Structures are given as C-alpha cells and as structure tokens.
Length: 304
Image (cartoon, rainbow, N blue to C red; front, side, top):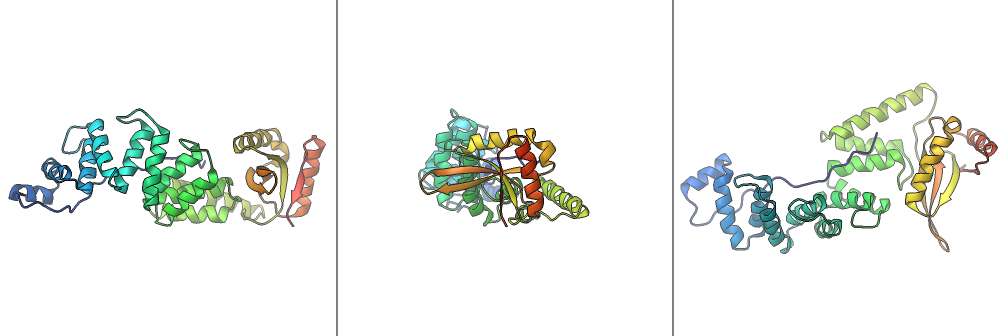
C-alpha cells in the first residue's frame, strides 16, 4: 500500500535573469509571452559568460527539448558547468541524469555524489532524492535511518514527496516505531499539497482506524505491548525474516504486522528486532506468545 517512489527532477527554469544591454525589443516581448526559443538565445549568451543560473537554464532546455532540440549530452555539459560553480539545482539534475542513465552511463555513485552536494546546500529536491538512495541502497549503503534524516530536512521545507515518504515509514514501522498518528500527520501534510499517493494513503489509514474503532481497538501508537520473535544483525536479512515469519504465523498474528526495531548494543553493534505492532494489553500479547511457542517459535513480550 505504501511503496510508490518517484525521483525529483527540477523542470522549471530560473526566470527573471538579467537582460543584457543588447536585448532587442523582440526578445523582451518574447520574455513576456514565454517564447523559449528566443529566451534560449539570451540565456546562452549569459551562460557562455559564466552565469550559473543561465547555464542551468540552458541545460534544462536541452534536457526537456524546450526552445532547442532535446539533447541529453548538451544538457549534461551545461548542468556540469553550473554544478561546478556550486549551483544546487544543476547538481540535483545532474544527479538525476546519472541515476536514470540519461545521456550518461548510469552511475549510482555519481548520482549520490551530486545529490549530496546539493542536499548540503539545503536543496529539498536533492535531500528527498538522497533519502531514496539510502532507502534503496543505491550508491550508498542501505540505511533507513539516513533516509529518514534527509526526508525530514526536505519535509521541514514542506516538500510533499518527503512528507509522503515519512508517512510511509511510520505506517510500515521502518526504522521507526510504527505509529498511525505520525503516519496520518505526514500524509495530511503531503495531501494538503495535492500529493495523489498521500491522499490515497490518508483515506486508507482513516478507513483502517474506523474499522479498528468499530472493533473496540485503538489506533497504533508508540505505546502498548509487543511480541518479539527474533533479533537479526543484518537489516536486509531482518526484513526478509519478518516477511517469512509474517506469512508462516499469519493464523496466529491475524491482522498484526511485524515491524523492525533498530537497536544499538554497546558491545555487539546494531541489531534489528522483529516485533509485532503494539498490542493493547499484556494478556493478549502473552496469549500470542504462547501460541507461537506451541509452534516452536521463540518469543518474548515487550512493554508494560
């Protein structure tokens, strides 16, 4: 339900760049009516003089085929000129080209490098993209904690894709305690900006909580009791084991989902504990644990 992801590619040019002393009346009129072919000529003049914003615009026009023929190689060259001057929007788009293999051999390492440079300058798009790289393990070691870190930076700038992804992490209990209240909060923020997936997820969460209320249950929060089934060293292995255990013991667990809880042990390093989502009372948690034990599955009740 909560898995769809999309990269952020900046598609709007920097408008309002200064006109040169040689700008003709025809070109000024073209600016006013959005004639990109004549704007391209003016931006190209500025780009050749080293104006980073103009270089980004020329790269973007070649990338999109607006006002000039589409040419990914030319787009890359102009993005690179702007990116090397520290222009964050060009760095983000250059990262996008390397991640998707547009006009360059696909390289997740190069993509992550350029996203990181732009993210350090506060680019919400780059922070969001770098978060995806960490979630998927592309060009970096897979790390959900780092993904959440960068998405929070972007979400604090009201970036809807990042707000949606934070909602997903809370809804699924990935690197955070599963918490429907937090999930709904972030889905609401993204949905208020017309993020389609967030709107769908928000409806799903509300309907789920309505069904739970009808059964006398409480929405999932960070409190309650949990049943721990295993503790695994590798995050990837833990995710696979949680999926296996969830399928194997579905008759016992019912609608309860298994989540991963990251734990740092001083002498033993990081472990990922496989636990149920919160259960309202200890008696119910103990009952589930007894049933698991009868199937020769070790477990313990956490909380209270």
